[in-house]
Image 1: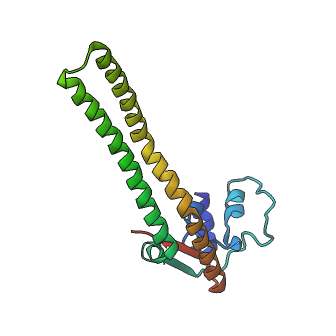
Image 2: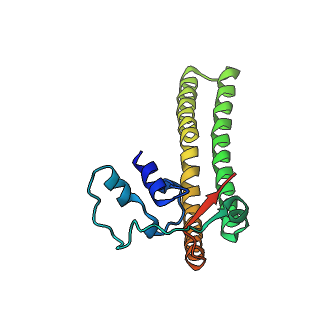
Image 3: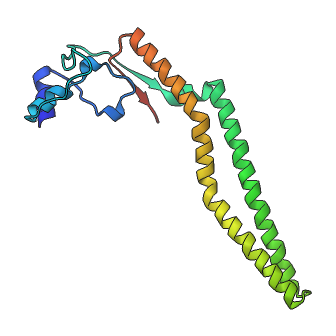
Length: 177
């Protein structure tokens, strides 16, 4: 209700959650007014004019899905991620083939009891490695992707901030399909 009241009082057409913003101008931060409406004392503002809302806001958007894949750094990162994914897949397949080979050797019945026990132990060890690698592969791939994509998204955010300042945009939203 406090948010709705402040919005109506100041003629705001939109009030967004901070998580949805890619860029914001601090003077459009309505937090202090809303905190006061809730009967609380707002903290000391970092910016002196915080809460003095502009009468008009310039809102823009950025179509991330069409722009990001065109970046050379993104293309290289996507290629590196694909190569890493294939490497993990081959590693998993290699262990699976070794387990299958051991199972076939045991089924053939040409082994002594001692050899059979040794092969079964080897097969169990490989099966454990196989399961561990399968379980960790997605996490490893996600970590690799995060490592490669983080600088790309950081550089992109810097450019969005530059455009926002140069064009006097109050908000720039990232549009995704």
